[in-house]
Length: 200
Image (cartoon, rainbow, N blue to C red; front, side, top):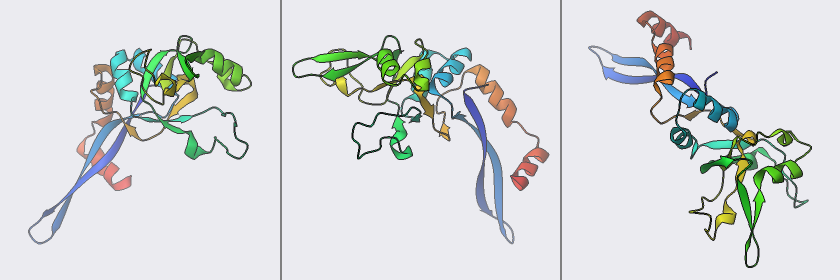
């Protein structure tokens, strides 16, 4: 199964006719990100021959949903309503086993390995089945380097714990393997197009 969906839509324009107005309707097809776990999206794009740079560019700026149950630090606040689960992807990082989040102390920073944190904190959830080789995803600040004074504002989450939201367009050039599949899906004879316009 592909990491992308070929969604069909319609483009219409109105033009003057001899004694009436004419409406012209054409079908259009475009690629969208499939609403799956980010880890699955990355794996499927790799298997389709997409380079890491393209995979990263196709995800940065896209919206995803946190799938795990977060801890309640404040008994008066529930961190898990759907409105609080949606995040924006800002970067793709190292594998889960190698990525760290930082906690700012008074005069220093404390590194917290992402894999250890999620295994220990969420051991009773499905997060204890994390793939240590799957990349982490940043949904916070993007540090300039490992010495950035604001590096503790980065928020690295395993890609196994984030699900892409639906209806997000793929805005980059498709690899030939994927573009051929989309073209084959989009090509319809005039009669088929007319039937789709009338019935969809």
